[in-house]
Image (cartoon, rainbow, N blue to C red; front, side, top):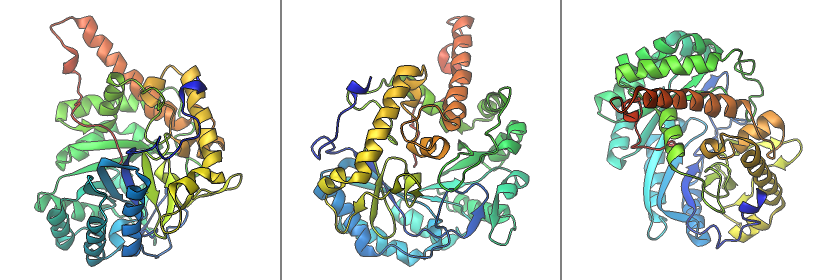
Amino acid sequence: MAEFLIGHPTPDDLRGRTRLLVLQGTPFCNIACRYCYLPDRGNRARMAPETVRAALRWLETSGLAAPELAVVWHAGEPLTLPVDWYRDALAAAASARPAGTTLRHCIQTNATLVDDRWCALFREHGVQIGVSLDGPARLHDAQRRTRAGRGTHGAVMRGVAALQRHAIPFHAICVIGDAALDAPEELVEFFAAHDILEIGFNIEEVEGVHTRSSLSRDRAGRFRGFFERAWRRAAALGVDIREVRTILTGLQQPPADGWPGNDQNMPFDIVTVTHDGRIHTFSPELAGLTHPRIGGLALGNVLTSTLQQVLDGPVFRQAWAEIAAGVAACARGCAYFPLCRGGAPSNKLGELGSFAGTETMACRLGHQEIAETILQHILQDIDRGPEVPISAAPHNLDKISSYV
């Protein structure tokens, strides 16, 4: 089915496609998570305000910017930069906003540094917040530690308390490794007890410099059992799980002609710009990586490159040829394609060594097992008859899954 993919794209093919701009204010992170994929998290370099402006201007001059653009500050830990740096950066972004485009700013944070001053900035600028939190202390601190090896749970919960004290909404992202598989109810009850009612479960993935996952040897459907139990408990406690929304949205939205994939494997749906202006597309987790077969994955620089130069460059040509082949192969051979739409290039490269691969552990657990759980629940509702409508299943279609 490779014929339903566009060939080598032109700037006109890509006009208005970018809905998510990921800006790396700094590669530095103040903690050392066991499963971190970042290759350069000890680097304290900062993005200059001019690079922020250049990133927005590059989207405008390239014609890529969609009418609504989410700007996500991400990777390493965004809040290791000062509050005043963000005031300057947000002003720089506003000054270079593409004509006809609405910006909204989002930060994904480990929350260890959140305090009243940060909360004032978030409220002033309407910044949307995601918090990385792996549940109760015994699970969280086993994975998310300081550089000195101490747990970070207490600091994260102080940051959560500050957000809640200032009435700043946020969602949580919880990474699921082997230890969490035996504690679905404990996890969900922890979030509910702390009034954190929107969560996403990220499986511990193989990507970037994290080359082994504790889930790689999942046996006898442990993950599916985890998700089934977690979902049931979440439904009882009023906790919204992102993955349920994602699957149900996928069931309602068939792949588009010509652009059949997802936002991670279709070119320039997402643009990531590193602190020094280097341009990446596809999975944001690819930013800053060097692969032994491909080399550096940067496509150009917002300070010097045009979109046409990026498209003509050898890195984009090789990556896109492999990614398109992988999406086509997934479409030909996988019954779950309407939900997954070809997977994430970062997972394929990390697990299989090529963008052109098909099934990964991330796909098998993060899409297939979850889909089977949800579809089984829906079919059970249908079998019960019209007095128990499908809408009784614990899900919410108001939102879609994304990085924000």
